[in-house]
Length: 119
Image (cartoon, rainbow, N blue to C red):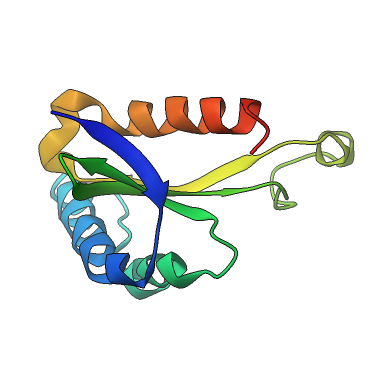
């Protein structure tokens, strides 16, 4: 299987919504909170003109997404931590049927490489 990451676009809204719903079902089956109520908000991030959402593809098919920003939200961070430059990775959601390939790990490793390249 060949994996790649690219910026999300409006064509990704439906595939991302499907990924969010699949992950939500997986979480709910295990009695955990899910993303179901946020599916529209998460998938709409694909249209962000600032290009902060990215899609993980396997053989050209979207299987995950994440959002990267260089501004850290103030929740759960001290003032000292907020003063440090950092990138923040959030809304990372992957297709649970591909868990064996560890797509969340692939996204995290890609983000580290992308940020360290100074993009």
